[in-house]
Length: 233
Picture 1 (cartoon, rainbow, N blue to C red):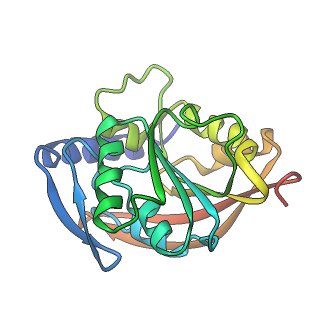
Picture 2 (cartoon, rainbow, N blue to C red; picture 1 turned 45 degrees about the horizontal axis):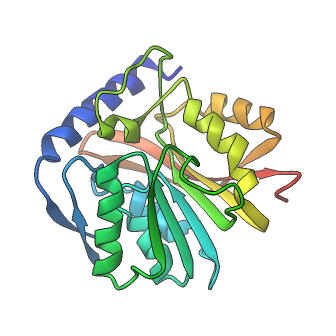
């Protein structure tokens, strides 16, 4: 599992987000104003959401799926960047409503659909996308970890169960030339991720990365990874 330092950092981050998630707020990211509802993960405490949103290759007139969408910044930005059909899913009901608000705010309600579900559960078996992306809950929690809030789902992955599902089922929802991406960071267990990817017949390629300090004291390397396999490449 993740190091004790990473897990403790995750606990600290979860408590901070929970304290600050009591009331709706507005924030600026990617040159635009966004709404954040209570109990939804705040995407402005680190550079990950903004960075991945700028790095992702958006298929013009194509389709994109964002897993664990939170406030929907990346999903809406994908629509603004030319994606015709965007699906955003999250286990949190508040996050799903948040996506709808931000899509409407930026005139993208007709292009963005928001669904509630854990990983791919909300999709139809035949749903296919040109790009699938998840800014993952990178910190590995022990197998007996009990989630206490929606915020914790955004930070922790118990025994890397969700990563396993993403690696197993992601390729099934790609178009013929579709691409599977993962936002990851060095607070996660990269060695285990690579092992799980290999078990799923995938290779982990680093597309881009940046090392940054956030929350005034925490340094991490944020990586956009592409998961490539025989059926994908």
